[in-house]
Length: 446
Ligand SMILES: *Cc1c(COP(=O)(O)O)cnc(C)c1O
Image 1 (cartoon, protein in one colour):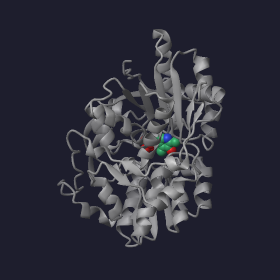
Image 2: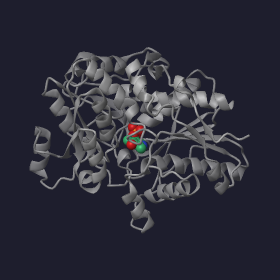
Image 3: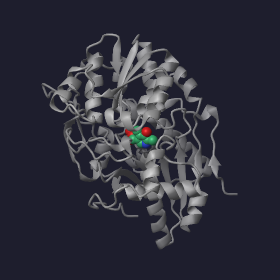
Image 4: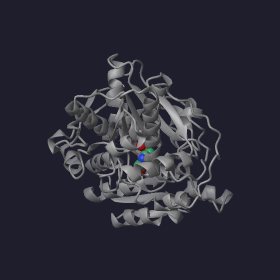
């Protein structure tokens, strides 16, 4: 009988994270100091990160133990289910099998607490009393508020101003979990004051909020900074997704042909795909296709350059070698707020550059069509970010139909869209502009 949900036992929550740095053919280009442009020393990062996380950032160990306190909290929602999207398959009349790993079951509603819990743990272990961070649409801020609350540390969130005003409910969730939330740019930091001096009406951006949070962490002893994506340690924590997924496919006695996922800073998709990319690096699965999906409004992998760039707008962070649209790039205000970032994870960027992964980009119209079809067949309402992955899975399933191929497609469904109903409302009432962006898509061939 066809299995619809592949559910693991709590004992199957991974005991170790997988660190792909151990299996790269050549090491990552090192991060550079923002002023000297010389490779940064791990100690330089101590003003904003705990040593436990700095060690993970540069580690070459293949597997890193997950502390039992972190696994204990993971048990609230992990392991997450793997679903077979049988109703979607039926609607598409495809011979392909479509599966999705459902990360929307966590309390904040996305994959983000996989890293937020770990980050709160390591900071608490080193006596840090307060974490500051930025948030765009509010997914990361709420994941960190949820996690800091559990470890009894304070949390301050600089929330991009236009989201603060347009999406009050994520703020309410953060405040419920005990965080302070400010619309950024603020007058609390030099970075914020500088931006406001030049543009008093600034709507903010993720890059500006990062500058504010990093500045505050660097200037307060008891306070550290937490980043929700991009960095190696964040990607490491997210590998619980892919490690569980591998086990779930083993239970099915199958192996995927195509894995896709949405990419903002790259954490959910790196976490999903890296344990499988290991097989490619070892030469075992040369035909496996790994496909990142991004918005045409912020086409970092499909249109960006692979070079060193800052992680924030002001230029306070180390320079990272990554695909980037330039640190001053402010993407149009699309609904997939979590994908509005100018750069991408250095690890995911390198693996893309070297051809282990491909990328596709879609318009908002295209991703909402996919979100609607998914909601109307499978039931649950995806986040606009996650709908990028859904769109790619649907398009590959359609190609399988045309070629009459029975491939196994899996995507990471990174979160639910219950706080994004305004976006759905806009789509339903034709308020989403179509054809705003030139099509630049190149299909990863099947
Ligand atoms: C933040 C977010 C993303 C994008 O971030 P990544 O680091 O690329 O995973 C995708 N989906 C959801 C639901 C998010 O909240």
